[in-house]
Image 1 (spheres, rainbow, N blue to C red):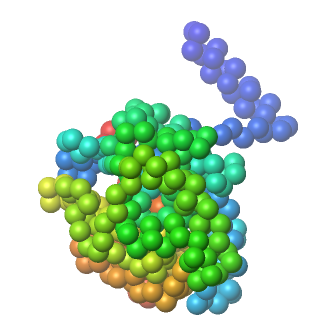
Image 2 (cartoon, rainbow, N blue to C red):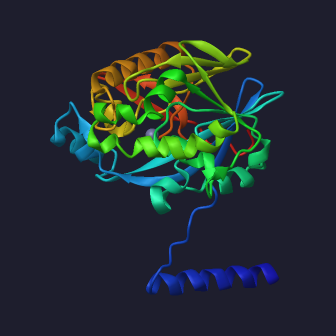
Length: 313
Ligand SMILES: [Zn+2]
């Protein structure tokens, strides 16, 4: 009886709301979990950010951008997800990228909430693998200027560390990229001071089951991480694709945030071809949350196949 009364009250509330103002509530904390081999992979949402695709994409007609967005019921600016990925192995808890943290004003900084909601504390993270040192990937390393992950070792390619942690390189980039230098220095600073940053070079196993693959273009040391457990693989491909609705149909389309737009396009084509050929999972930083899925080929390009939602992974 009580339940019926509750249902009636709920229906009345909905009806009243429909007639007047409907207050739209917020989303819950963003985490999504799946299994890759014996590993647990948890996508963590740091936030979403309005991305002016029509202004930022290059090597593609603006009209074509608008058409491709329209075909997916989108328009510029597109809300882009800021995803990070937590991988739990038998003996480690590895976070791939950390989101924007405080560096994207109110659009980011929700990763700690998602992490806690998913059942982990920042202190539990043993290693952080950075795909590159842009603000929306390193900003989440710190909170109030101190290490958010006090027990973690931060791994990053030497090429990216050398580039973004040296102000002498500011003259080599477009103005749009200048804020990336202080972003990288401030976010890595406390870890550098504590001796908790480890760099690596070229293609190498950074940790058992985590293989770094250089994918330059977006940044000089932009890196993919191939996570392997048993016979299953997941490729965390960082910023290989920013606007899936456009760049999968037009893989030659780069963005102004790429340090080298041509090299970024070449890396993107390589990633898409390999994802199709090998059929492995892709974990994408800016594809709509959870950013986990596969790539399939279409008549003229590629398409994203999002993970099939599963309540009990
Ligand atoms: Zn990014």
